[in-house]
Structures are given as C-alpha cells and as structure tokens.
Image (spheres, rainbow, N blue to C red):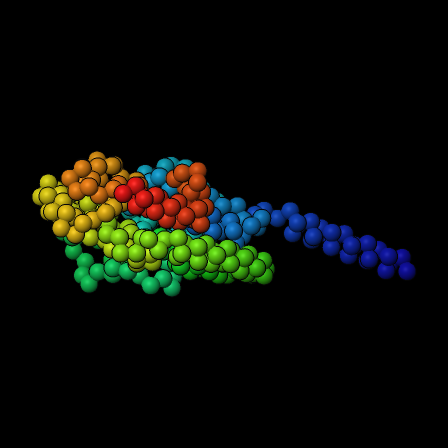
Length: 306
C-alpha cells in the first residue's frame, strides 16, 4: 500500500512539473520584416507569441537602413515572417548570412513567406537592370490589397502550426476570428471607397497596383522615371503633359520626399496625398486594418478637397 502511495505521489509531482513547464513556457519568439506581419502574427498567436518587427513603417522597404541590433534579434528568433517576392532582397539576405540561425533561412520550416498563394501583379517578361529596380518575381506590394491580407494571415497560421503543432487549435481559432474582423472591414471599405472608382492618379513608386485594382483607381504613371530611379527633367515634363491630358486628379507618395509631388501638383492642379505602404508609420496605422483604413480615408479626404 505504501508503495502505491509513493508511486501516486511521484506521478502527481511529475504531473505538476509537466503542467508548470507548459504554463510557464517561453512565448514563441517571432521576428517579422514589416509591422503588417507583426500585427497579424499577434492576432493569430495571441499570448503564445512575442513578436517584433525589424522595420517601423517609416522606411522605404527597398532600402532599409540595416542596424547592428538586427543580427542578435534574428539569432534569437524561433520564427521569421517575411513579405517575400524579393521585397526585402536589398537588405535581408545579408542579415540572414550574418546571423547564426539556420532554421529561419528560406526553405526552412521556421521561415514563413506570406506571399505564397498571392496572384502576383506585374511579373516582368525579361530582367534588364537598365530598366531600373525591376522585381524578377513581380510587384511585391501585395499587402496593399486587403484581400491579400487574408492570404497573409492564413500563411502565418499555417507556418505557426507547422512549427508548433501542439498549438494548432488555438492558431486556427484565432485565425477565424481575425478573418471575420478583416472581412467586415473589407465589406465596409468596398462601400465607402466607391467614389474612388475611375479616379486617375500618379504614384511616386510603383507600389499601388494592387490597391488601385481593388478599389478601381487608374494609375497613369509614376514620378520615378524607372523603378527606384529618381525622375529626370525630361521625364517630369512628359509626365506633366500626360497628367494634363488625362486630367489626373491625385498624386500619391509615401516615404519619399514631397518635392516632386508638390512640383507636379502646382503644374497640373492634381491633389497630393501621402499614403502608407506598410503599417506602423503613424499612431493610427499601428495595425494592418488601421493602416488600410487610413489609406482609404486619406484618399477620400483628398478627393473631397476638390
């Protein structure tokens, strides 16, 4: 009898220790490349994850200033979540090479690429560096279409479950709740953004293709003479003439200087509006849904000024 009592006590202690280990387990350490992904990962992982974004939303994503602190953060990561489509190609590969965390490298289970399954726009037929900063895999700014936000969220949930299958039920439940919230926002945006349909605009960089297609805007040109290349005087003259002929109503820019947008506005009468290419740059764009909401509201406000 005493033997049974002793074994029972040992089992109880082991059970308590096991539960304690689970209860006080360290959160999953997730590093994302942009704040959009950080927010969505938090929505899906909840208390199971500790998420940091390498960028803050104010950077031009094709030329992010690399900080020494990025490497140790990557070294500590359990999961890396990226936009993919070479959006981070100018800065992330060198960081991954410097970091000593092989499990987050491309192709590994802990590397989550949220572009998987996206209908990619503007895939080039040929690659020629003379054409500027051309993206071989197509336009990587797919996050600007909120329908792609659904794909991003699913990819994150799948990736988290792949690495931590014991939490799959929680991830799936949180994903369903987030998609319901996002779907409600998408329905609202489609209604309130109706006045944007057919509006002609010029963008600074070629990052508005997905947003324009979703909400029915027409892009007439870009301020950059080629992707990633500042405009020449001749390009600006030709663009001004085209804007006047097409009666362009809006000029959209993001993290760039407003010098050329203001110059074009003074010559064409178009209204200038600064939008966000990723979340996080402003206090009211600190989540993916708020960031899309900000862009829709800003465009509508710019149209009303006319």
